[in-house]
Every structure is written in C-alpha cells, then in structure tokens.
Length: 160
Image 1 (cartoon, helix red, strand yellow):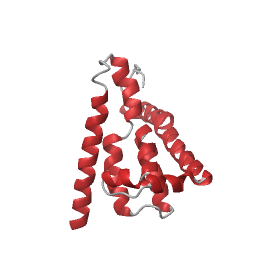
Image 2 (cartoon, one colour):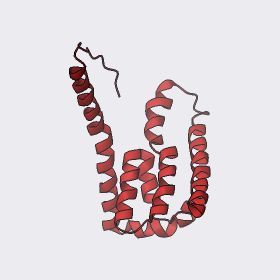
Image 3 (cartoon, helix red, strand yellow):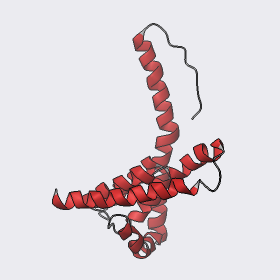
C-alpha cells in the first residue's frame, strides 16, 4: 500500500468521510480480491476433483498443524496468500460440511499466524534488502508459532 498525503479540513465529519472512502478503497483492492480468489480456488479444486486428493494426501501434514483434517490444507494454502482468503475458504468448507466449528477455530489460529506470509515476504522482506540467508527464518518462526498455537487451541477446546 502506498503512502498518501491527505489534506484534512476543520470539519470532523468531512474528515471521517475521507477516511471511510480510503478504508473502503483499501478493503476493495486487497481484502475483497483475496476473498474472491479463495472462493474461486475452492470451486476450482472441487470441480476438478483435486479437493479429494488434497483431503487424502494432506491429512498427515494437517495433523501436525493442530490435528486438522486434510481438507483444511485448502484453507491454509489460501490463507498463506491472504488472511481474508484463508478465512473465507474455511467458511466455505464449514458451510459445505467439510470442516467442523472446532476445525475452523484451530484453522483461524493458523491462518492468523501464517496468513499472508507470501505477500509480506515480497513486499517487506525482499524490498528491505534483508540478507537471503535470514529470509527463511520468517517462515520458520511463523510456522512454529502456528503449530504451537494450533495445539494450544486444540487443548483449550477439548476442555472448554
């Protein structure tokens, strides 16, 4: 997102409207497109039959990530690109009955800790000139925090 200079007036109502317009513009450009991409991604996988393969072969990986079913990988991958897209995919999978509420709660923790990493890496880490040997640590730390948080959420939900 670019830096923009806004001239604010003395009227607080007008300032509010300027901020609201800018907020809607940011939402429309970044959040809505991520959500749309997630729904298109989910439908593509469903129509091509790849969704069943993901559910079958990603089950061991998703078990490590909080004991989730393999189908949760679809939302996790969508969340890797965009937090909004990942949560929208999880909601779609919940609506069709592929995920439970507990699965979605655990998945939300994962998406919030690992979500949007690809964009952050490109927009921040690469642009800032961080040494290449240090860049993988961003992913290692995020995934480690995600795994630990997901299992803590699983334990909380078991006793809650």
